[in-house]
Amino acid sequence: MNNRLFSDNLKYFREQNSLTQQEVANKLKIERSTYCCYERGKTEPNIKNLLKLCKIFNIDCNALLGYCVDPNAEVKDV
Image (cartoon, rainbow, N blue to C red; front, side, top):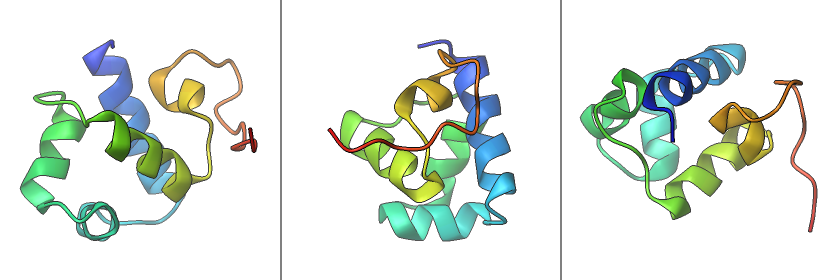
């Protein structure tokens, strides 16, 4: 995973959803400091939290990871 692209996308989608770092951390049931490390590119979420982030922001994982041209792509049921 490209940490810088991921962390930039994470912050972008959080702000697009008008959420604070604390609100996202609460939804993930993690400490704010842990979430902050995600946005700074210091650490990466596990797969479970990555999928939760996509649900929170209502986006496809590809958009969050930077593999999608359309950052507004919605989550599709599989």
